[in-house]
Amino acid sequence: MDMARIAEPEKVKAKVSKSFVKPWLGVKYLFKRPVTIKIPFEKIEPAPKYRGFHTLNWKKCVGCNFCGQICPARAIEMTWLELNGKAEKRPHPKVDYGRCTFCQFCVDVCPTGALGFTESYMLTTGGSEEDFELYDWVPIEPDKVREINERFGDWRFPVVKVEKLGEGRIRYHLRDGSTFEFRILGYGIRPPAALRKPKSAPAKTSKAGGSGSGTKDENAGKREEKTQG
Amino acid sequence: MVMVSNLEVPRELRKEALKHDMYLKPISEDTYELFFGPQHMATENFSIILKMDGSRVEKAIANPGFLHRGFEKLAEQRPYFTNIALLLRICVPESDVPENIYSMAVDELVGWEVPERAIWIRTVVLEMARLASWMFWIMGFANEIGLYTAGSWAAAYRERFMRLFEELTGGRVYHIYTVPGGVRRDIPGDRWLRQLGDTVEYIKSKLKDFDEILFDNYITFARTEGVGVMDRKFALDHAVTGPNLRAVGVPYDVRKDDPYYLYPELDFEVPILNEGDSLARVLVRRYEMEQDLYILEQLLEMGPPGGPYMVQDKRLKSLPRFKVPAGSAWAHVESTKGDFGAYVVSDGTHKPYRVHIRGPSQSHGITVLEELLRGARLADVPVILKTLDNCPPDIDR
Image (cartoon, rainbow over all chains, first blue to last red; front, side):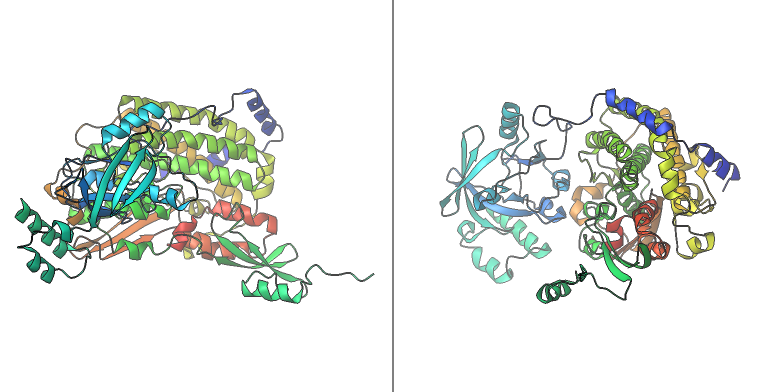
C-alpha cells in the first residue's frame, strides 16, 4: 500500500481531545425543532416507486409463471379464474403477503408488463381469520388501485373484505364501496379438469404426475395452451 | 435472624427453570452464571453466557442462533437473481454489502463487463451504506455508554440516508438493488443527486456536534480507555479485519489492498492506531466516517457517467432460467464490520452449486469476544461488544 495514504496514529488522535466542557454544548439542541414525526398529525409519504402491493392487468397477463419461478419466498401461486362467467385463458398469479418480501423481482421479470406495483404498503390487520385471508389475493387492475389511493391517500390495502360465496366464487369488497367478483377454478400451471378439452385430456392426465412445479409441468401447460388457441 | 439467600428458589420452580436452561446456577461459592442478552440492547439478537466472579467475568461463552439460519443452503435452491433477496439479510445495518459481493462474484462467473454508470451507482450505494451503518453503530455504542443523546441524533441522521435509499431503490432497509450485471433502477434524477450532496454536507456539519457530545466527551474516554485490549499478534491470529484490525496498527483495507469499483481513482486515508483498546477502535471508526463523507463528495464531483445501468444481454429476458457458466469466483469488499467476501461455485445450471459468505463477525463475535471478555467487568461487556461491532445474523449464517 502507498504509505502516504495511511493516517498515522498522531493524526487520528489529533482529531479528538478529552473535554469536560464540550459535552454541555449539546444543550443548544433544546432550542431546535424536533425531528420526530407526530403521527397521526403529521405523516410522511412513501417515495415514488416505493415497493408496495402488486397490481395486475388481467388482459395483459399471459400466465407464463415467470413470477412464480423467480419469487424467492414462493409467495406466488398460479390460479385459474373465471370472470363474469367466462374463464380466463391463462392462469393469473395469486400473491400471499404472508410470504411476500416485496422484492418485486416478479414485476421485473414479467415479460408483458402485466404485473405492477403501487406505493401502498400498510400491511396491518385485525386478528380474525377473515382479516388474515385478506392478504392472499389475486391483484386487481392498476387503475382501480390508483383511483382508491388517490381518494384515500393513506397507503392501505385496497380490499377491506373478502367474501366467499361458495363453489370457489369470491367477492372483493373494495375500499370505495364497489365490489369485484370472480371464481377460482383451480390452482397450478396446468388447467383444471373443468377447462381441459375432452380430446386431449387423457394424454395429459397420464403424463403429469401430481401438481408439483418444474419444467415438465410447464411444458405440459404450454402444450395445453397451444391446443386451446 | 437467618439470612435467606435470594437464590433459594422453591424446588418446583427450580426444576422448571432448569428444564428451560434459565436457572441462575451457583457454580461455586462466588461464581454465578449470568445470561447477557438476547433482550439486552447491546447484543442485538445474540446472547452471551457469562460465568461471573463478583462483577468480573471469569469466562464468557457466546450463545448465538436467535436469527435466520441456513442462508448458504437456501441459496443453493434458488435461481441466481433471486438469491439477492435472501443473502442481503446476512448484515441488516448494511444490507448492500452482501448484495454487492454476491453480484461481483456472479459478474465474474458470467464474464460481464458491468457498465460504468452501474459501477458508479454501486460505489455510491456502498459508501452510503457505510455511513448509514456508522450512524447505526453510534446509536448502539453511545447508548451503551449512557450517552443517549448522541444515540438519538444518530438515529435521526440515519433516517436521511434511509430516505435517499427509499427514493433510489424502493426499499428502506432491505434495498434489493444491486443485482448481477448492474443495478435494478436508474438514479431518479438530478434532484436525488442534489439531495445526496445536501445530506453529505449536513452530516459533515453534524460530525462536529458528535465530536462535542460523544468523541471528545470525557465519559467516552473513561469508559473505553484500556478496555478490551487486543494485541497485534492476537488480532492477526484470529482473522480480525476492518476497523478492529486497524486499531492494532495493521493498515489493511480491502479498498486499498484489493481495489474494486472506483476506489483506485478515489483519494482517501486509512487510519491506524497502535493501542488496540476500545478507545482506539472508536477513534478509528470516527476517522473513517470523515473519510467516507470525503469519498462521497469526490464521487458526486465525478458525477454519474452516461450509458446503461444494466448490462445488455439477451439471456436476461428469461431471468428465472438464466444459466451461469461452470466455474467459481471470489469477491470481497470492505464493510464497516470488516472484510466481507462471497465465494460462488457454479455447475452450469440456473442455481448456484455453492455459495459461501465470509463474514467478519464470525471471528469478532465469537472467538475474539470470548477472549476479550475474560477478566472484564460486567459494565464493560457491552462496551467491548459494541466496539467490536459484530453483526449477529452473520454469525448465525
